[in-house]
Length: 238
Image (cartoon, rainbow, N blue to C red; front, side):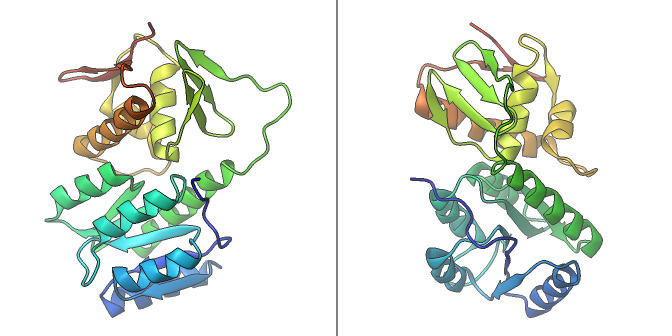
């Protein structure tokens, strides 16, 4: 069974650079977040096997266990745990791989502490929506074999649950709400990312690739998300 994030509000910082761990932890503690720090992926995973944090901030290049493998393991424990990558500007391929493994967001080094805190706040707020009780009389959205519950960020395909991250859900919701209409990558970015930031086309493509893979795992014949080359994506309701 997929496990939810464990410690309320706890932010885990995993980075082999001591100055980054210290600076980020200081900024987050100043905002009232409890923080734990790990100097490498292996130490972090040992702690995560006991208790998951509420959010994980991962460096990509680390000794013993890198951020990509740590992300993959975390997604094996929880599909809803918010994961934010820290990366150097020349690690675009690794960032794309991280997003395809299930990360929600990334920041390039050097980064603004104010921006990092804002993204942490947004990711935790979105994750909290998953725990909110559904309101009486609320309608789900049905589109072909898909059923989406916007309040609980839950999806069913042919009656079977599909575990999605919040970002994946929001992008799918943007497509399903307007069947047949093409959504540009910019429109999907605005739906999937609540903060005002630049997200590359490759980032959106990575999320769509992972979203398709999850849907096809539940229903191999599902092909409802169509690529419109040079423009974006659309949902085809059959």
